[in-house]
Image (cartoon, rainbow, N blue to C red; front, side):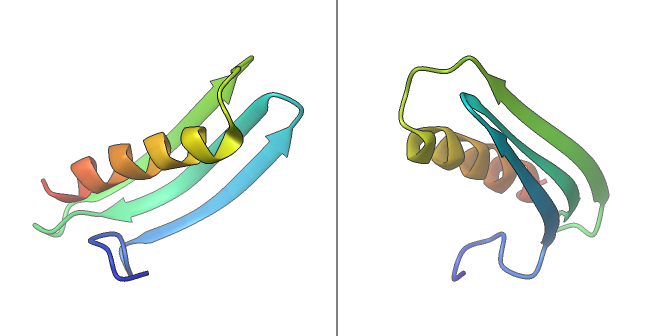
Length: 64
């Protein structure tokens, strides 16, 4: 909340040991609708770091 993504993303998470996924829909600032799926597999970084990377990627897409 309180970011460029607020109100622009509808998504579902998925988690299994060393796998995280986030898939859904994103509306950009220009009104374009994007379908996305971000999957991280066999990672060694903390899950919070993986989530932060996914959020930054979506924020960048939202600025289109």
